[in-house]
Length: 421
Ligand SMILES: *Cc1c(COP(=O)(O)O)cnc(C)c1O
Image (cartoon, rainbow, N blue to C red; front, top):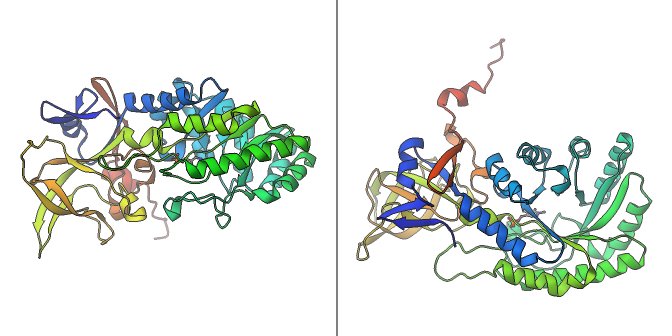
């Protein structure tokens, strides 16, 4: 469920008509619903209670500081994969002891920033990384809390670019080598083992791969404890999928996911950490765009929008589907037409949908891409010198621009012409 609904014939974000935001901000823009973000966070929280737990929002899915503050104020932890994300979380007022640091290539500089600023734990992904952290922490006279990310070799059955839990993926250490690597971690100075980490992929639409992975983590917990390690936290990653179409998809609900966690790991007495991104942010956001032209071609008609692949890259990058709807509600018997929906960027890849049945729209009409909150704005760029897409946050009947659109001047002024030219 989300809070983007038609009211009085017009698509609203909560109590605000999207057409009103478009008139004030211009198009394209991302719009997020506070109520939906809050609701999705609470679904996870409720699903894990009363187990000791921390729901750490995966910042990489949507990293605007205003969104992080909203979730942080609800008590959410944060999962970061770079020093930039770490500093965003801190800027949003999230204390270091609620931030976990994931990612396969943390640099020494990033480790230092997090150690000095305060961190709940580092999720270690390799032995060289573990040794580097030991050195950095020792040099600072600090102790770094760590989990080690194990790769359980399960098939997440999702898009190949976002599957991470097979042995051929670059993530984590093979679970078969876990004992050896934990033994080395225990010997290294400056490190304190606190638990185990696993994350098998994104947009998972069934629970079975999670179940396989979590059973392996449960067994590993017992083994590592028998070896004398303290395993008090289990970080289970993110990855629960969302429905991208209204019709036929029904991925598992957070409550079912929570029940699975309790069933497979609840007996171990560990604090459970999860790192959901997409399920919190995905359906909390839409991308609103205007029709520039309707172009009739040979056997196909094109809807040319003012949003492009630089604003929302998922269709071009992952062949992802986004529902596209008209902001003005079509009548129940309104005719539809098949359109290829495209942006203005000079690449054939700049295609959002092919032969999509849409209500008849004309130049100047607004459309909304649903489910665009996750991996939307964060992947946007200025390709074709299109100024970075702005972001808006709605709460009840008011909205705020939480990242403005740069002016052409702002965009161009960032380049520096050397004085020898
Ligand atoms: C991407 C990622 C997540 C979030 O995945 P979602 O599918 O958005 O829930 C969580 N943890 C790690 C380590 C990740 O790489």
